[in-house]
Amino acid sequence: MTLPAMVTGRRGAKMLPIGSIHWWLTGAGAFVALVLFPVLNLWLPADHPLHLSAFWVTLIGKIMCYAIVAVALDLVWGYAGILSLGHGLFFALGGYAMGMYLMRQIGREGQYQSELPDFMVFLDWKELPWHWWMSDQLWWGLSLVILVPGVLAFVFGYFAFRSRVKGVYFSIITQALTFAAMLLFFRNATGFGGNNGFTDFKRILGFSVTAPETRMALFMITALVLIATLLLGRWIVASKFGRVLAAIRDAEQRVMFCGYDPVHYKVAIFTLSAVLCGIAGALYVPQVGIINPSEMSPANSIEVAIWVAVGGRGTLIGPVLGAGLVNGAKSLFTVAFPEYWLYFLGAIFIAVTLFLPRGILSLTRRG
Image (cartoon, rainbow, N blue to C red):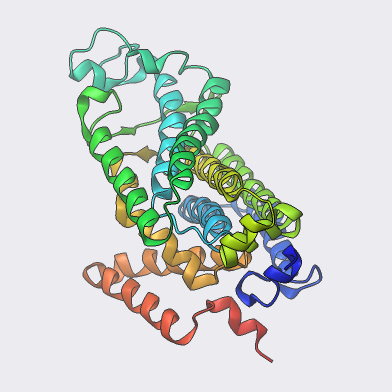
């Protein structure tokens, strides 16, 4: 059987037509994020009824970071059939890499007026640990954002996929990896701030991180990265590489008989997905203002899978929708009914699984 024949008929992984309403809506969303929101936030006075406050800029920017993670997971789960429950780790590693740079930019403006971060002074450290080398350079921090999640995913994925670990077993070991990393980062001796992590950031590239212009610049960069991630994902799944991934998901043994090595394809897409998560984490930290080991919580990685499932697996646009709806509801419910949020999240997942197994996006495809 030829490779194209093996991947036909799988509706969940079918790409939306190029003129689809979904992609037109994506373009409209890009216009709103890159043109309308900056005008509403920076040009309109704070007392204007249409003014977009700093709260909403931060909240929407945070959700867009989550949407990047959701699209990254969709590439490995929706198109390659690999359910990773460890993407929260890659997200947090990117955040910590950026956080190290931001902590060094505080300088002597910290509580203890030392060149060392405050938590190191509190722990009576006399010098920076070796892994903080060149952490005051943005180019090095951005390199770590890509290299650390990418190398970890490459090494872990290579040995896991070469050993033919798949299905629920792969999901379990990614959860174990995330949990082990979380416990490691909780320790003060690792030099990552322990329970409190990194916070109280002052500047990025010399600009105040709390200035409205800086916040909007980070917001717009996040929107551009999200759009680029969607376009990259579309290009991948429409390419020969993407068709092989879909074939691996549907019939891995047949792909091997056709002469392809699934390990190489799985490792490649898993590594790329991890890098995208790291970039999302790096954008998240300066906007939210904190990063700590709780971002590595296994529950966070499970929640990412819920975003993808709610929006529509194997659609690229669906995970963006799912991340927006779930986190928007989370922001509402954790304020109005904080004790019931987890029950509501579980109800959403169960309802979507039972009544919309292809996600909310499938509602727009029904004729």
